[in-house]
Image 1: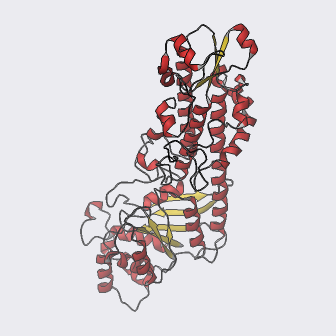
Image 2: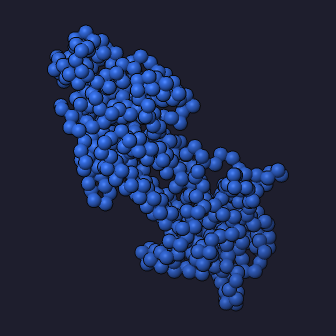
Image 3: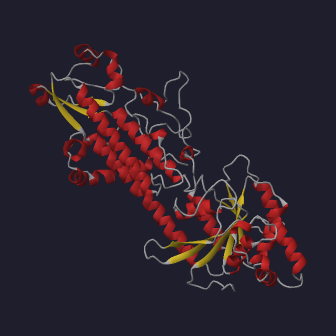
Length: 494
């Protein structure tokens, strides 16, 4: 039980402690990027035993921090009364805690007796781990008022004679009482605290947590190494995510199907639309897996991407993003061989309905050879490509702001995500929104990046056209890398 002072080169032993149901396991899930760690429920005393996890160097495998998830402190006030009655106040804190651990009330192994007022076995588990750790973080539910039981918990924790740093969880709540908590903590000489919301995640908050812990240590090399490696890993994840999105967009931009001039385009258009839908879903799941949000029923809740699964070919969805589609009967589509949209609608007998059914497809009318041979080439149009790009960037931003403790699909949406359209005074979409009001789309629909324009003439780049997935991906790899750099400049998170 004797704590070993951390020395240079040793992994930090960090106990995660706090009142029951404050989100200790939730914070560990987010720090570990592991939706499966521990058990999270909206009820007291979910964690019954100390569970260990490790944070390692992703390159070398070296253990940098050993984390210990402890049971919740259920009756610190009762324990404080026992300590006052049964231990000598002139003894130091560690001696008083060791005397408690040797008492019968700390020895019970019958978990069914936890509710018994004389059973402090859960508190004993916490204190044993505390005395064997280098430091602790005390998790505070920021929504809770400052009560006497929390003051007693901090008094008991202070007797372990190790640095303790309060961490405020659920800080994104409107009911947070952080100012009251900080006042109380300051009166107990706890002047260093940090905010870390396990649901509304901010990477900067995590770095601040490690930095604040480092200031409380004599030897902080391991935490400094952890911060450096996690910063590198976070940036690399972002690069990889943008390449996934760029590869998907080029694959779709290069998608082409040919039909004869007299053929009904509708069956082909519907096939192309379904292929794009499936490709977008695959891209979304690649992003989820990259950030370790597995779409698996074993997890607390699989992510249900309702906001990202609306049909990208729905003209109403285009409008909601402020995307102006081509005017005419075939809103959102230019089809035909030098024939305007209205004439095409008459010829095919589709009329205005073609806008809703065939929207998002563009015919290549620039090839004279095609005109002579009577061939129509059908592509995905710029408006739909713009929508797909914007939605992918929005999903990526949401994932970067979602903690791994989130148990509600609606918590996928980060707090800065669009909730209203940028419109001009006449109600139309303003494509020239100022820098303080970013436009809803990543680029104007009529100004596709050069990489997507070039893909138009490279049908071999698209696995949707050729069916040769690996070969097509290799052919578009350089262009995807180039486009990914531009996508990062379009990022819309603060």
